[in-house]
Amino acid sequence: MINNEKAIDMVGVMKRFKGLTVLQELSLCVLYGEIVGITGANGVGKSLLLRIISGMVVNVHLCGVN
Image 1 (tube, helix red, strand yellow):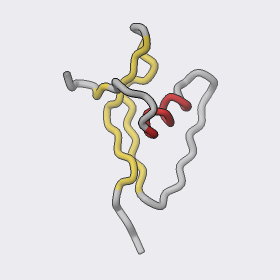
Image 2 (image 1 turned 180 degrees about the horizontal axis):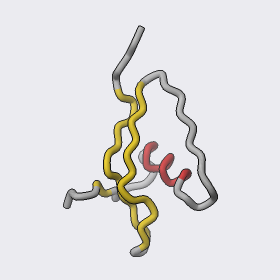
Image 3 (image 1 turned 90 degrees about the vertical axis):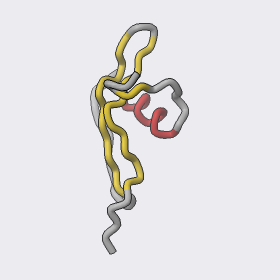
């Protein structure tokens, strides 16, 4: 069975803390049933991304949207 339903669909996500841009124009699409790994160096925003996905971080902006 092929399921093309999106479990996560984020486009142009941006997050700033105290004037510092910590995520810029991030896009991510994950389909139900997919397994995705998030890797990167320390301080690049992996944990922040997971907190945004889980709803623990508020005031996330979409690039180009006021």
